[in-house]
Amino acid sequence: MILQVPNVGKMLTHRSAMFYNNLLTIPVLIVFSLIAEDWSSANLAKNFPVETRNSLMIGMIYSGLAAIFISYCSAWCIRVTSSTTYSMVGALNKLPIAVSGLIFFDAPVTFGSVSAIILGFVSGLVFALAKVRQKAQSILPTSQPTMSASAQSNRDANS
Image 1 (cartoon, rainbow, N blue to C red):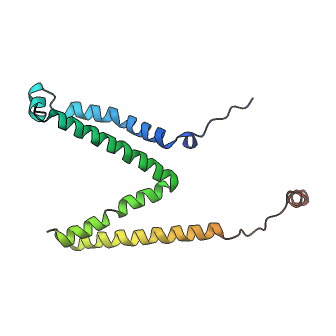
Image 2 (cartoon, rainbow, N blue to C red):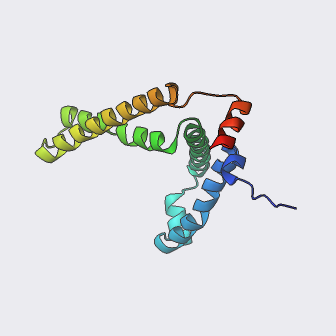
Image 3 (cartoon, rainbow, N blue to C red):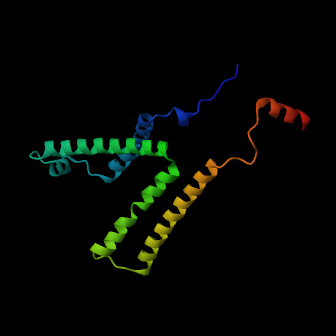
């Protein structure tokens, strides 16, 4: 009897990937919260006053639900495209923000900031060109023509 090891990557659904991703962050958040935060009752009363406690809790619940939705969408996006494309989109979406910071806000326009933005745009173009070429190579026929099983068997027997 041959035992097969299941491919975990194919077994994970969007929900399970989101669940395990969020589950792995909980211990880290708890440890750093206990280290860095002041959990005294005076601090809790100061940060969560009785008058606004309910609205703050509702806001935290909405924030948590939004984080779960974003995590689900991230898992879906990685599954539909690839992790490389997901990372590239994540990096490239910061370029318009950087440009608007230079144009609309009082951010200093230096050689380093402008060259970093240009490098980001060029890397996006190179990535897009590589994806187009990869797609074109997968569409083109292979160098060896397709043959029937009997012809392949005959070829293997003669070589």
